[in-house]
Image (tube, rainbow, N blue to C red; front, side):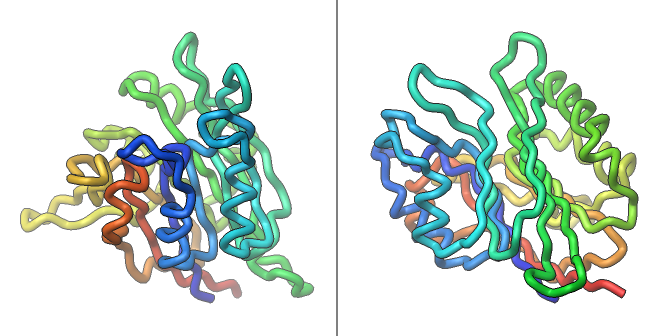
Length: 253
């Protein structure tokens, strides 16, 4: 079956004009019509975003029957974190705390999604939706926390698995860990004329210089069909990141 996965740091739906405008995020998401959407910086109950549950607002507007929100940061009023929207049932959800020391709180939302829907046979896809820190050493430690988590440790190399989100990995220092060490493939690489890979650039949205938003995948039954970043004019102002979209063929014996 063909599956489209999108990851997008929506910056609380507050654009470069400092205006809270979820309708712009909705326009971006509706246009790409992904089956599974990984969002970062999603508010719930915060005054800056009209105290709405932004994950629910987006899921309702786009007719996603399933969504999950993991809280990473608690504000004076409200909180924010990562959210996953899905066309398929979310059968398991947990938030993994990736906070390192006194650094800003960070997290990774783990969901198990049943691609079989209401069919009698389970077709599980494990999805890790993360937002890593700003320093290289912090990100390395966070990757270690994730890999030692019971959610990750319970998977084998054959299990279809996605790790996506805002890696903040300007210099691709984590790429070797995921690709060489953990045997993932990077969906969001583009090949330079030299033959070397480079992450698709997504930040800042108005003139992308860094490939911060990435999708890694692993599993015997996953084949990458294509990948692209959002080029809609509205995406240059809707958030400080661009969405990146990957299409897969996932098949089970």
